[in-house]
Image (cartoon, rainbow, N blue to C red; front, side, top):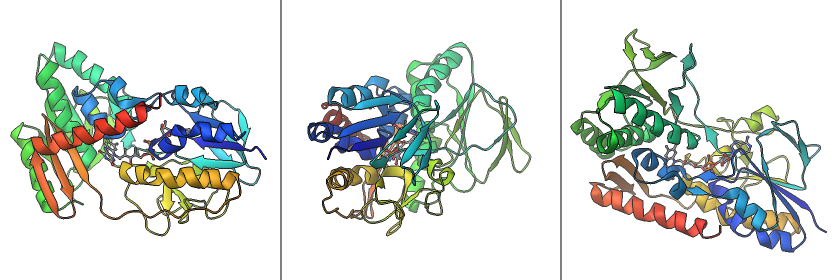
Length: 370
Ligand SMILES: Cc1cc2nc3c(=O)[nH]c(=O)nc-3n(C[C@H](O)[C@H](O)[C@H](O)COP(=O)(O)OP(=O)(O)OC[C@H]3O[C@@H](n4cnc5c(N)ncnc54)[C@H](O)[C@@H]3O)c2cc1C
């Protein structure tokens, strides 16, 4: 019997499902995809796009086009709530949509520190579209005068953003900005010391200031105020404070993990409602809590695709195996990188070349479905 499959978000975990959308529609199933933008941007290349290594067009998928070409419906909107008992979702526009099977790939968001004034020049590192606006603003401002850029956060995103702001300005701006990272504790504190030292060395060599143990208490217009009372003027501020799963699930009273992600079992299936599935940053995989990295979303793809089809057709589900250690490569700007996997670490241009090759190959594979 034909049924209705609804996908929330066209993110990394839905790529294979989107690539095989025609297999659903050819069997008579209805497929609706909801997303705030007709495009999905690949975050792994976001900092590189900020730095000018890639154009915005090179790092995005035309989600709407792919969905419509293969017989699905794309709705430009945001899901705000799920009524799992009634099998209904509520959109920001006020529209409602019912489903037989639902798959959630709504990603994560950057939590904000206390802000006492809204400024146009404060940019979260997510959604990636924000980095396009940031790039334009840096070039406008640093083209006219000397500016300062503050990056709030001390993890990989902060490091990648700082290095790529440097690259952007170095290549295209008339005035080199002062760039400072405000890290609440030590920079890259959750990573091995070898990685930490490489990152610190690479950034400080380029005069990027790293202020460790500098927890930001408040952001006002053009100023960062630290917990220790120190204040620093910044023309542009990036928020790279880590990410939290989409709030849709906690808002909907669905079972969540301690981080607020949709609690799913080994089949990537909501523990309370078997017709709801999920993948990527928005889930809490209860068997083995996962880092918020695109690698896991990518690994979940085939299982999610299989299980959505199986659920529509009452066939057995497949379990997800997280796959163990993963390759991490950071883009530090200036064609430098740091590569790390299972105790092996190296930096410099070979790491950047490896990341560039892997990321471009990933994009080619999925842009081909357009
Ligand atoms: C700057 C930066 C660099 C990174 N680099 C890497 C890297 O090199 N390698 C790596 O493995 N990981 C990297 N990560 C982590 C990686 O971005 C995430 O783990 C990955 O994006 C998760 O994929 P996702 O599909 O779950 O979420 P997303 O990529 O965020 O996709 C979610 C999708 O859902 C849509 N959406 C959101 N809310 C709603 C809603 N309410 N209704 C409908 N649709 C919605 C969004 O528009 C988006 O298209 C990086 C993260 C950042 C911030």
